Length: 562
Ligand code: ATP
Ligand code: MG
Image 1 (cartoon, rainbow, N blue to C red):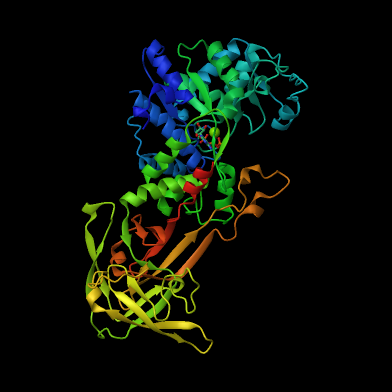
Image 2 (tube, protein in one colour):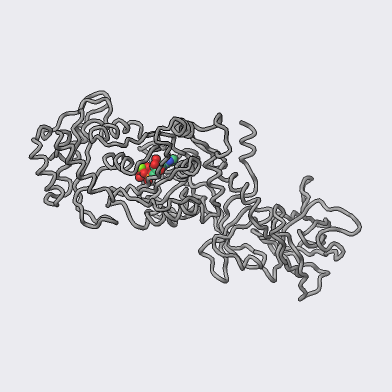
């Protein structure tokens, strides 16, 4: 944890906050904020920002505000506000009393806009959005000044008040800051501060007919809240001079320090809310929490733990250089956590029937299985052994190659927690496919060890055919077939790069009966297969499980190579 980290290994943000604390810069105070726009669900990139902002507040004895940047009523909804709160809580962070909204400050922002108009630093522009965009110029050419730029203060005050009172139609006028149309920084070329929008806002209803632009609202909201370190992603670096200009011209007492860090990109996925919304709206996924999505709610549904996501965010660190993180690292963090915390169960994905010919019909042997070898306190459970069982089809080969040690004709193997069995005959259908195995068991090997000390080379999982539960299991692969879908050029349709096999549904799984007690959200290791989470789609007769992650850790290998 960062709390234990020596100052030598602090990331650059923590270094700045440490220095400020030591120099007494903000009277030793640390206040951060996480400022989501409630126009979508949170994704793994947001988790990085959440862990950074809430983490700093915790480590430095400060506080972190949750501030909804709700300046765009047409795209924002209460559903998103609720999901954002649920996700942050699930990750384990608390904002206490500090559930704040930029819309709380609409009145104050309006008054400050009037201050700038009075100073001759803001004007009402009658040009359309398209005209404004056209005349903004380029990186090489300066912009063109608006014909409305020299309006008198009186006229501007009058027009702005009438914009507010709802007199003008949407898009007919805007309020702009009067800065410099020739500035090399495009953000300084008379940026729009307010637009007219007759829309219903999820909090302020129809009170307002004008809405502040993000760039106008953001810095002042931070200042109002006494935020000390306003941490954002790199693309806002070029906006900083504008935020500074506003606060300086308004002569505010408190001037937060903005710090930019690199956003998180994860292979085979996207973190653009616009594209994630398109995936949902266009039906490419089943919703924001479809376990293939990179959203926090999807990770939760898939079986990720809060700790695994927090550990991931800690491991990737905070830097100023853009980077791409392997999805496998996220999976690795989950495996690490679930290996310690998840109970083991047996489940057969691709069943092949085994008939124990020397086992009495109608009898059930109750065997004891360990719940978690990593955690003695997890105890044990009973698994029923019956005459007919299922094993994995892959665990049998009629004509095995040299290195195949599992079941084959004439061979003895161990069934986990149960007995040694020997295969005597493979039963086939007319097409020559193996449909069942006739085996015998050795009652002297109860519990999985032979009294005479003889060994077997394989231990396999199994379930009782008579007692098994039928289940649907959903297997997930990467959502995108390409490694960096964010890099797909605008001329191409990024949807074409979706992985058609990102979801494989297996309707023919057999689970050990104790899994009938699982509730949605419960996570298990299915022995030899992977980690699975019970899905809310489960019904009493038919459990549904999501594969959270396979057992095999490809990340360790990648990490070793590099
Ligand atoms: P947009 O503004 O385009 O809707 P956004 O991803 O910036 O999308 P916000 O709700 O504004 O969404 O983000 C809230 C906070 O999360 C911001 O401070 C932003 O910098 C941070 N954030 C967003 N995406 C990432 C990412 N991929 N990595 C790290 N931080 C991110
Ligand atoms: Mg944003």
